[in-house]
Image 1 (spheres, rainbow, N blue to C red):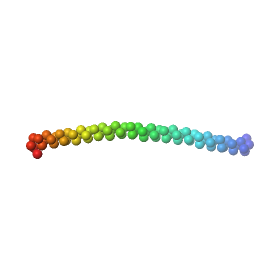
Image 2: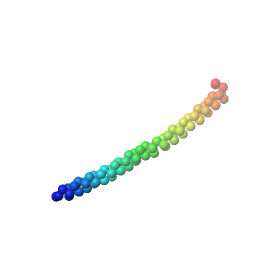
Image 3: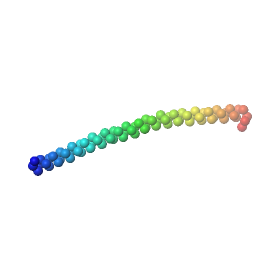
Image 4: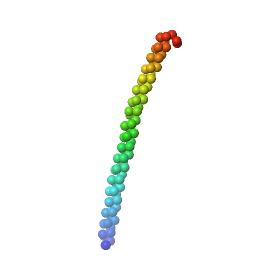
Amino acid sequence: MTVAQRLYLLVASAAAGLLGLTFLCYSEIGAVFTSANFANDDTVPALEALGDLRKNFLGLRIELRTIVEGTGLV
């Protein structure tokens, strides 16, 4: 093997390594995006449910106050 062939082999192996790292990073970034998106998909419905519970609680509190005021207990 001549020196020129060894240099070509060295350049080719470096290029192949960089290409492999590129594909590996691309797949890892996709996995991180999927995990982050899963957290977002779970959080939004939970916050909506908490908002509904708060609205129901405040409505019940107002109704209770109205009942108590109407009976003269205040």
